[in-house]
Image 1 (cartoon, helix red, strand yellow):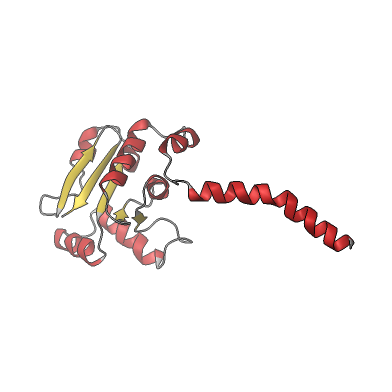
Image 2: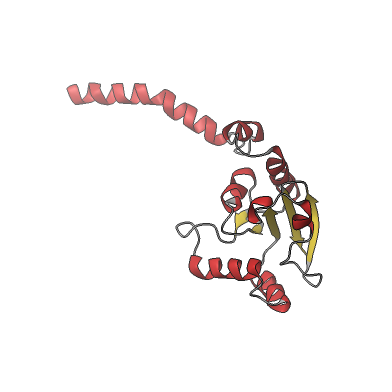
Length: 168
């Protein structure tokens, strides 16, 4: 009888928690106003770029970011996009993908290797920020040293903090 009463008490006290958890999970997980308040350290321009990407992107696009700036961590928070290489625990075959990212962004890959890489890995977007360069100059975002004119990239969004290129 005591076990039965304890079980009933546990169910009664946990029911409201279960209700609120299920209600929270069923709501839209991309509540940008809430995300802005949680991520107060993010400049509005970064959030604006991610909102643009979320409105523009198709079903779970693949985004290429550098592995050093932390933008790969933020892309899935504000969009439904997937990141090509973010962390070793959350990325399958991370060493190879991290090397590919590093080679792409540091200029180790030639122009045709970059084109093949973007096509073979089915990259949809490239996201870069001023944190990838260590410089607030917008020219670095508009004409970064690792993007040549022959690459199939179209600049679709730019502000003082972030640039988004679409692979065409």
